[in-house]
View 1 (cartoon, one colour):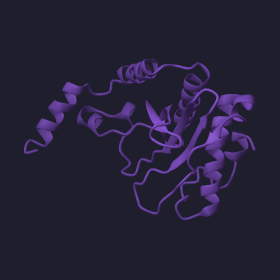
View 2 (cartoon, helix red, strand yellow):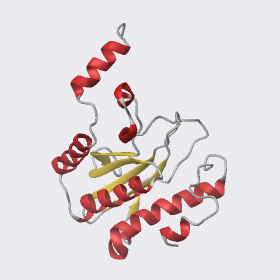
View 3 (cartoon, one colour):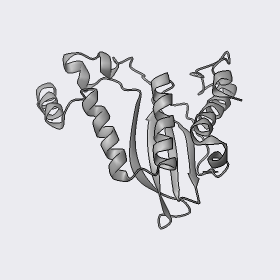
View 4 (tube, helix red, strand yellow):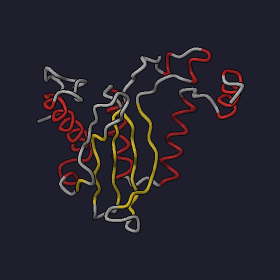
Length: 186
């Protein structure tokens, strides 16, 4: 089933996945298809699951929706679903102090992960993403960058830093100033 077909499903974007088993299964299928379309048929067949998708009934729990590795290249990817629980303004819409608590639909970074034990590590890209078109597109781009183009840890870190600068994320100094003003007793 292609992404375009999954998006036509009456339950899409499957936001009731915590209570509805069908939505949870469709969410799992959706993210698997996101990866397959990004990696292509040949590379997708080489992917081996690391952890099953998981959900929880607690509010504000970020479920794992995709977790796999490719033994041949000793690299993998993990996608965790983000949700805007508090209806915070999106980063690109945030004004003034809102930018310190604003929501952004995705983030990504390089990490390491044990496959069979902590001594059996692989490189992994860890992506937190919601169901928005921009997040889905970014997940596909980062899967390609990391698993096909073999971007290094430094390149992935620079890509995130460049994204933050382009979108005017607060700097470290600005965040410190904000927290000193808003939470002076901490």
